Image (tube, rainbow, N blue to C red; front, side, top):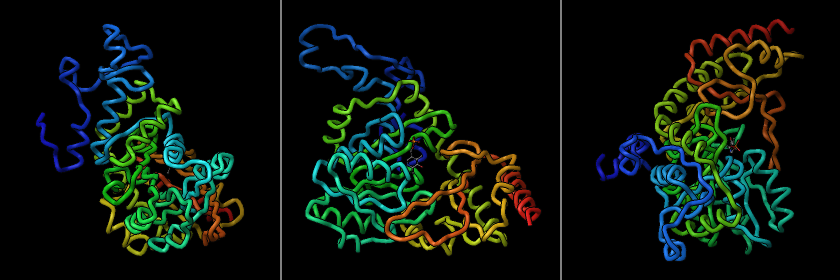
Amino acid sequence: MADEKPSNIDTLAVHAGRMSREHFGVVNTPVYRASTILYPDLATLESRDVPYTYGLHGTPTSCSFEEAVTELEGGARTKVVPSGLAAITFAILAVCRAGDHLLMVDSCYGPSRTFCDKMLARLGIETTYYDPGLGGEIASLFRANTRAVFCESPGSLTFEVQDVPAIARVTHGHGASVLIDNTWATPLLFQPLAHGVDLSIQAVTKYVGGHADLMMGYVTANESHARRLVDTHDQLGLYASGDDCFLALRGLRTMPVRLKRHEETALKLARWLKARPEVARVLHPALEDDPGHALWKRDFKGSCGLFGVVFNPLPKGGLAAFFDGLTQFGIGYSWGGYESLIVPARITRTTKKFAAEVPVIRIHAGLENADDLLADLAAGFERIARCT
Ligand SMILES: *Cc1c(COP(=O)(O)O)cnc(C)c1O
């Protein structure tokens, strides 16, 4: 293995964080399960001059994954946590304190909103939701105590693309931090730190895991935020097991090829759905007429398997008829696994209403053959027609 850093990120995904030479040449870093780590003598214990000090603070398995991710993100430090939501709350707690003000994008992942409204309110941190369409105009929402701006692009359920570089310029001008939930794009399709973000958040549960059998998250910090990331992680006692880090590393190696296939299939489904009379709009930034397309094209290297569909008004019982006979799409939460999924979208907004009174659904295109998925959806539309 060459020591030179490869310039293509899919090659990096194969090589990053491997430590075969320290493990008898074994390709993958094995699962280490540890609480106690033994020191050879008192002087070493007191100096802590060893790579691993205590299970909670890292093992070769968790460090392999963290190092791999740090390279992919182009960051300074990464810390793993037990879920994507834990990564969101951990990142916010790493920068905000009592009396601070947080700007949170209105199209955020629902549980992020709940954390702001309940936990942050309890801790004396005030949240203002901002329209995902704001770029540099976000300046007008800043207060003297605004500590951070939280982005998620494209937004959960509605898929608005944000002008992250413009937001980052304004935020840094105010001495505040930029955080992003980058789960949709992963570092393969959007590089947060290169676009001015300070803390990049990922639900590993989704595409990194990729097989619907793992709950995990991570946060990667740039140089200026690395210290508080590590300190906050230590203070909160956060952790991810060796078994989970092993699965995450295993998923990471194949993520570039999986994502390509998810992208192709999702685009095929999206274009087909867009032409259906039952469909009012498809929410997918890679479609040329999507409102977020220009920003997406400027900043992203591709799209994933997740998008939204706005129906036209359906007959009574139409949505249930559509969902309940599906044979290829599973009805269930989460996404990013090899299997296709479908859920109705429940959209909550503070700044302005999302312009759709009709059912909105979220589709995750899995790794099945796209024609089988199309046939499943087509049969669903036939069931809707029989409802009238
Ligand atoms: C699923 C999801 C999360 C949370 O991940 P969990 O591991 O399920 O906690 C965070 N952000 C986005 C955008 C998600 O879709």
